[in-house]
Image (cartoon, chains in turn green, yellow):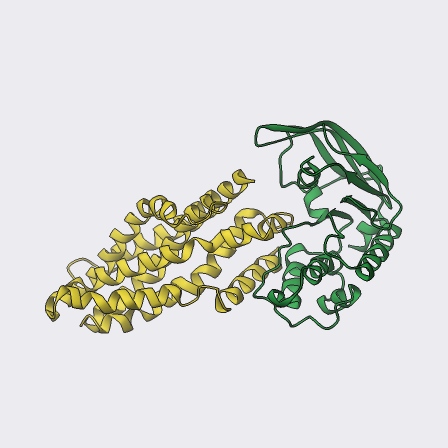
Length: 207
Length: 222
């Protein structure tokens, strides 16, 4: 999977329109994101930031338009299989320990990176691996979910309010990880209301 | 991809045995049903032995139904299902893996413990073994037929009634051939293999049709 990281990928979102519950959230939205670049999605609550991330992750079908990921000057990639999504629904089972959760996602998502223990340590959680996730605070839970980005290597990170519930130190750690990811040729698309500590372009989502 | 599917099975089995996982719920219900039925029917051992296979089968069917509603709902709620769809394994295969795990945790124990419960109904050894044997493919068919209903109601809360209404018609053929198999082992008027093989065919068809239909239902809800 190291090749994927070295290969320069480009995400192209063309003319996307999204409808949820009969209401048009946005239309004609388009942008392009190259390797090592980050883009912040801005907009008021309910503007469709999460929906846009879901569309790019292949979980929602847009009303029109499409999102594509391709190697520069090369072949098309299966977008959902190259993307990580970290959002409000964190995919963590309360009954399982942080480690068990992460080893499951490591096997499920493929392209294994760090071990679960190392991933947790990288997010400043070296002491929780064997604690059931039910015992973790909101911020700790969010950090376990973010550790998924490290245990499985995927070039495109789709982050939905990644700093929610995080304390200042963890925000710093996350910014560090994001800078590292960008430096190795990764792509980041983050929906957020506040600065997340990396240099990034911004785009307004909404009608 | 195989690694991913094995991981799904391992995780679901682990979840089933943890607190709140529902392992044993179906079994306890099964035991309760079989234990109280003789009180309702009366102490006629001949009658109990005759209707024993039917009681065991109805008990197995109802026990399967009560455990089904969480099959996809838990993963739908916490976003796991969305993330699983972003892997390379097709959703159909993931659904099948979840069905296998659910069957191992709740269907297979029903079949294994059926002979023990059958003793309480005064059934003969041949009938006990025949019923247990019929419950192995039978519970597979019930689980995968039920998976369709579980997928259709994955994003609804408290929908056990809807699930049952959707699933019960699909389970009728399984029940008919299952009880026929168990009966054949009891009185030997028909060869055991005839209804048993039909039941196995139903189980195989249910695995394929159930996985495809449940995956389609899950996709349609996003």
